[in-house]
Length: 122
Image (cartoon, rainbow, N blue to C red; front, side):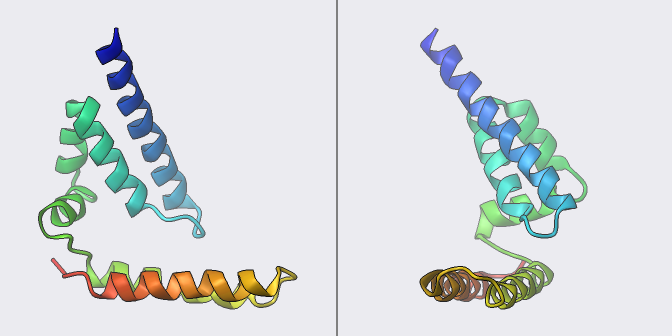
């Protein structure tokens, strides 16, 4: 019973992450790849067939495998993520959000961008 529940939770996380990745593919404000990576990771814990499907997917499989093997991120993905973060940070400055949020969130985005650009490329 306990093992079946754990497997069900891993599968639920994999499905939730996959749904969020699909939403991210449609909505420009939401990322896709991080959710795909989580989906593949969770599937590996409780749904090997889904993990295999993701790893062999023609579009997403090579990126997931590159991340797993070397922590690699394609240059195009780095540029897209950086441009989206810059755009979000810029738009945030024209809102009525508190100053600490308008400064803090872009600072976190800048840290993420630095980390991202330090990742190897496939």
